[in-house]
Image (cartoon, helix red, strand yellow):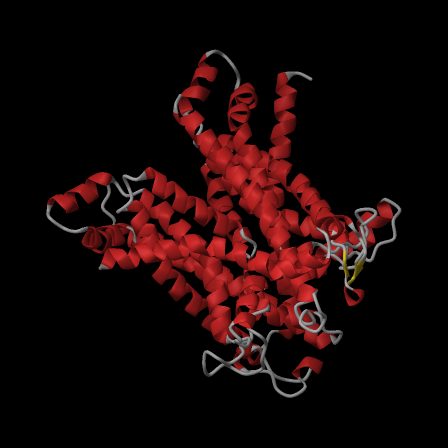
Length: 289
Length: 283
């Protein structure tokens, strides 16, 4: 009796992602029947009122913002992960653990508020004049900076875990052969952790790609392909969140937004699965030493 | 560059990276707190918006605070009811069937990775399909879907660590799977489970994208599941979008209140797990 009920919850849990996929496909079938997939993905003609839905500006914005955020966050995470696992004194670890937890726990809307308060003026008044650009501050770069901070705790946690499961025998063997600590880190630890680092970055990408509120608040949200990092951008999640109000008043619009959600779902799932598979393989390969 | 200087350079970079993470967190909290301070008052957390609130007149965000607590509590409750059996089944009943475990964990990973805005959009289309209006109930259902994977994964991490001997001892004394789950595993894992619940609660209270489509927004505290409900993240978002400086200042104050709630949750998770740690049987 207990068991049947419990099994039902498992079934329910496993069915949700499938339902999500079916629901999104079904809702976006209308727009897919109206325009070709190629037009939807590769056209930058976005005029919902005359039924032109080219998602290219949003897709490119999302891609640029995500790539820049991951490029900013990854080096910081790798350096910190090595510091915390190899060098740090216990007191530093005691400080960093709650710091990472809190960073991971801060809601994205608060990151957005911080972005509006600090990052946007910083980009407008400091960074863009240095490089000789005019910018309102609400830009691709501002969105990437905020996103980078948001995914740091996420990537960092995975990296620390990955480095910790590297067997001590390996590093001890390296040290016993006369390699220095730095040499061991470079040649043994980083080498062994490389697949793990790649998958952590992959998970970071999937997290950054779907992040909504903070990005919505600082990205600028102008429908055009961003020309440089100080230009405003309009990532996919921001598009969905920004237009929920009018999506039922314009024909095909709700279907178009569901298609945007489908793209998000798809990209995130692909990166997620890729990274998980890589992590599982790394765990297998490290535990058999 | 000799090996020694290379190491020194990288050590400096590592320490800089570590310190910069601490610095960014302090910057976030301090900058929001400084901006919030002028607008913080007892009225903010004890009153609902009065007439003209969104033009800088008096009132507070009690509607959003209670709304967020209603949504988060409901969602955490549902997610626990659905999630706890899944976590126990994985670690108890299916423990020998690695294939089933891997499939379940795979689906959980997928769910966990799905952005909350997608849950929001999905919840919205379900609402339209069944002719429901934006309401507390619709919000709770959407947020539940969103935090189930967080809850199960957090509990799974804890239950994984339980030593097999303990379970075998329980079976050998004649107890069933369910009895072992409730009386042995559950007690052994109380601190971890509490942490999982608080973690999910924190995520539920802080997420805006999933409730954007489904909760609606109102100046009143909801009286039934069919009422619209305001949530704290959305209150921050809407107030920040206002051109009136007083209202913007309140957005900062609301953001500070939300940050404090999250800090309290994360702190109590730590304290609670320390407190219950002593009931644990150590091997």
